[in-house]
Image 1 (cartoon, rainbow, N blue to C red):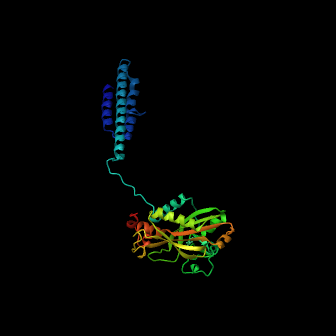
Image 2 (cartoon, helix red, strand yellow):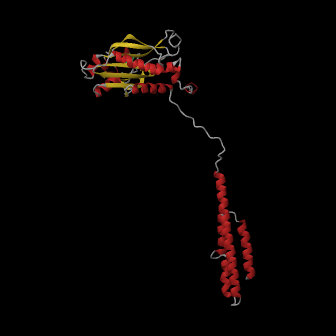
Image 3 (cartoon, protein in one colour):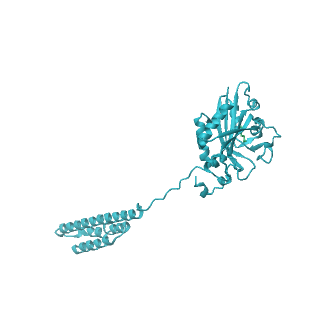
Length: 338
Ligand code: PHE
C-alpha cells in the first residue's frame, strides 16, 4: 500500500504539472479525489489493514492528500495569474500612439454673418423672432399692401405651392404676424430664409434676409437712419459711409434703399461694387398706414419703420466672396477658408 500511495503521489504531481487549463486541472482533481478517485480507492482499502499497519498508512495517506491538495492549489493559482496576464496583454492600450484629432465643424459663413448681425441689433434692444418659410399670399403680399397686379407677384419671381401657399419671397410677412399678436412698442429683427426664382452671380433661389421692425408712438425716419448707420459701422468699421436713395416698396412710405461705401475698396471703386464705390445692402422705410390698418393698429396713434437686408450681400463684403453661388456649392475647400 505504501508503494501504491507513493506511486499515486508521483503520478499525480507529474500530471498536475502538465495540466494547462482549469478544466484539465478539475478532471485531475476528480481522477484522484473524486468519489471513485484513485486516492479515495486506496483510503477505502484502509479498513482491511491490520491494527499495526493502519496508523502508519493512515499518516502517509494524509500526507499524500495534503501534498496533492497543495499542488492543486498552487497550480490553480498559477493558471489564474497566467490567464490574467494574457488578458491584460490582449487588452493593453498603447498609450504611446499619437492621438486622433477630431474634425471640428464650424458655422457656415452665412451663419457666422447672421449671428454677428443678430448680436449687434440685440445689443440695441431688438428682440429676435422668426416665422414660417411656407407662407400664404395674404401674409407675403396682401397684408403688406402688395396688390395682386404688383410685379413682385409675377409668377417668374415667386415659387408658388398649392392651395394659395408660396415660399416667402422676403421676411416682411413676419412684420404682420408679429403685429397681429403684439401691441406696440415693437422692436424686432427677423432672420430667415427667403426664396425667389433667380440664379446668377449675385442671386441664389434661396437666400437670407434680416427684417427689422420698430413701432412706437413717435418712431422717426432719423431714428431709422441712426440705427442702421450704427449697425453698418459696427459691422464694417467706423469709416463706413452710408447713403439713402429714394425707392419704392408697397409696404413703406416713404421708402429708401441704402448703400454703404464698398468694404472691399473703401469706396474707391472695384469689381465688387461695379466701380461705383457703393454697394446696396438693404431696403427700408416708414411703415405704410395701410399695413397698420391690416393689423388693426391705429395709424394716427403709432408710427414705425422697417428694413430688410440681404445677408449674402453682407457676407460677400465681409469675406470678399465674388460669386454668391459658391456659398451653396458646399465645397469644403471653399468653406474651410472661413
Ligand atoms: N422686403 C423688402 C425686400 O425684400 C425689403 C424691405 C423690408 C423694404 C422692410 C422695406 C422695409 O426687398
